[in-house]
Length: 83
Image 1 (cartoon, rainbow, N blue to C red):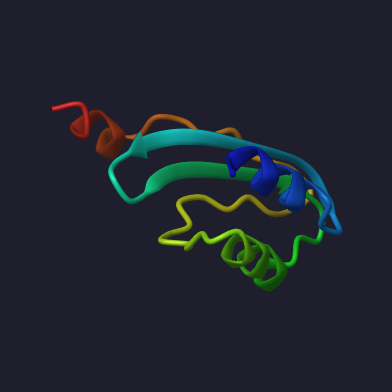
Image 2 (image 1 turned 90 degrees about the vertical axis):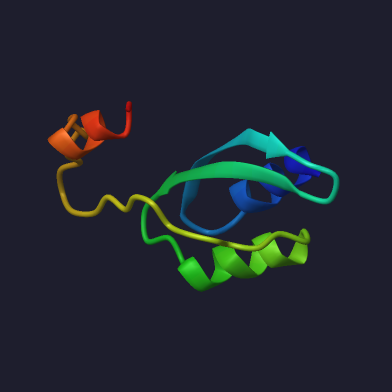
């Protein structure tokens, strides 16, 4: 299913690349982290595709936009998560 979902997402307009990482598996679900790169991505189309493959979007943890992508850097809050 993960490979089919990745292929389905990669075929959407504007998508240049898709990474899917399996984070956790339990009896009924697979939790994955999906990273999609591209220009003019259509959020609704992405969610619709995920749902067509039986998935649910629980959260969006990061969005990058603009002419220049800013590399993420560690903040004091990130260091607190280590404890």
